[in-house]
Length: 239
Image (cartoon, rainbow, N blue to C red):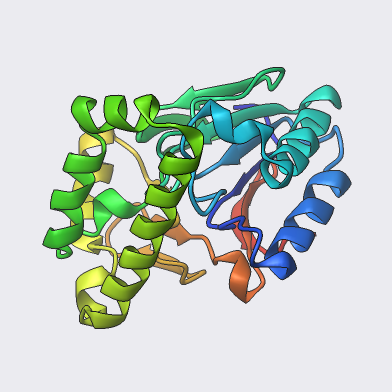
């Protein structure tokens, strides 16, 4: 990818959370044409039930903002999160929908981009649910439902997920850095960029050469981005 590249995720856009929504909208409007690629690393929306949702005023507000970013010359790419895995684009929005794990090159470094939920290997209940929800049968059922019904179901699953998070041991929900190291070995990479766990940390893995895992902070707590400016890769506050 040509620099600069900005990676953002875990905004969890929802009509009930205007603070993060307003900050993200301002971030999109301020994003200048110098940014070559904006990667949306999942959970941009708190839930997504399909293209019918694009007609909702709240969703339309942010899709229009993203259309504005693309119109200014920035390439848009989307990697699914656990909340918005059904997103496959929207009419008039020039966005590439990428797979769950993407290997790319930023300058001299090879980078793996992923939402992060696949790296939470200890959360077995979630991993089982993930396989069910993303199955062909579940996706077909979601697509066949009336919009009101699919929205009701998505909100129910979101609330269930939030209750599950409150009950689970914290250690079971963290990133498996051993697994991250295995991914780096398998992909011949030296950087993982992820989100999902909301920590906003830069974790340096041992060994030579140095390898890094950068994790986005969620926008409920101010948000954050990963920036590749052509020289360095860093976590930064949204501006």
